[in-house]
Image 1 (tube, rainbow, N blue to C red):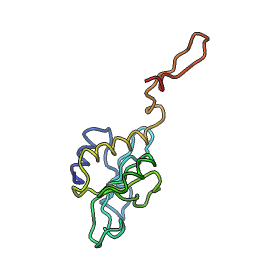
Image 2 (image 1 turned 90 degrees about the vertical axis):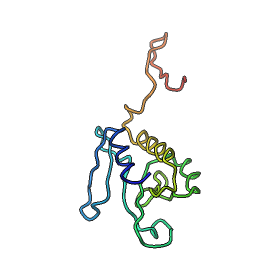
Image 3 (image 1 turned 30 degrees about the vertical axis):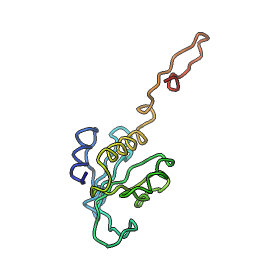
Image 4 (image 1 turned 180 degrees about the horizontal axis):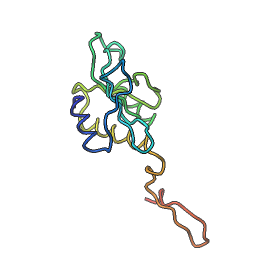
Length: 142
């Protein structure tokens, strides 16, 4: 998946538009939740040497928020790097050069979208009252 395909996928499947917050970096595109303004994807071009690769030519890449445990296992895969200019414990950088399968990019995008959603949006369980009038969540009962 290249940067154009990812941008089209995001705009077609998530309610987000590209934002360009830095005048100095007009190719850096931020996608954020409309309700809480949290970022879930940052598409950019990064000099290869900044990711530990050879050369200084730019590489299209995207930053995603991810679970730290998953990040640890993914960093050994081709095209996945410690996050560029983000918290490396919670974010990772993914190359958009074909080295990472499209389905994996889509999965990481979805994880990032969910991880940055407002808590109200993330809750899949419902709260109900039990026989004693005490409220309990059904989230863990799946």
